[in-house]
Length: 426
Image (spheres, helix red, strand yellow):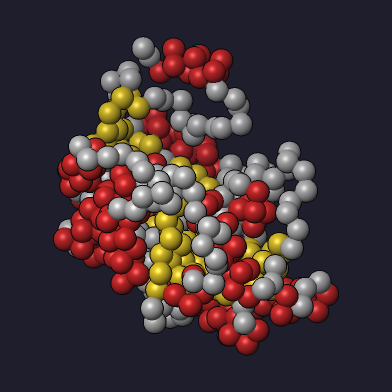
């Protein structure tokens, strides 16, 4: 069947509420390449929304999963344990971006990770207040969407958000929001609405994903760490999109010089298989009574063996270094595009490692981000043979999430397609 035929079936069978960024249907994929059902080939700069840091169908991931499928596919860890869950927890504890002993619990989705991190923080502090940031994305479930700092499309049709969740402005030079603005808003919040000793957790993405690939400045992270230390608040970093070598370190928070108390992980953890988790300081993680945390599919044996393979791949193929090299290559091309008059105006690149984004600017002034400019370019990129995603509070940002296992030739081919899409000619 063709893309058009599948689209017609989708329209009849699937509700509008789940959107799809492209009008194509995948037939097969390998590393950083994807072929649709019409036989068209694409370079993949989306990576399943940052899920495929080790690429589509990495042989070591497939081998691990295939072997596991000859033994058992599911028991529920809450019924019968299995070694791969424990082994993965041990590996993640050793990688935890904080000092002292760590423990890890595994789930299925990023939203489960962020919600359970808050549950753990509330149990550990005996408090309920949660502070997050505008532009932040923490998932679509009830508490996760309350923490998400964007109304449309994540909140506006669904009634009141859960209470006791508050938002601060995230620093964003494009909209003249500074670290000082964020900290002043925190002071106002503490003075007007929320005593700091009522706060269980502050949750923040070290690099915002859906919000536009904005990096949390180190001075903001240090200030938040100080506030948390003074008032006994738990600092949660949401590394769902920024983790597992994407930024040139295992976790993006390692660039900031501070240590969190709890870390949310998912996406590229398991190379395309559903798996998430919370890594936390052992004394915090053990506060919750048995049975208070979990989920039927949490930490599936398929996901666990895939994740163990992913961690081996990151180490053996030196993907931390590769992320930095890919990021430098992308930045160089973007900076070159900014000097040209035959392309759309764009902002300087931003991000860490190979987590790179830039804004498409309004052609009228060349300074203001263009509303839905990223979507415009992503649509043109698809026609040029590139799967690409936009993001940002107004749809203005192009984000690059090419697999870290992609060759230089594939990266360059994708960038050539992106350059074509940036042509000022419609």
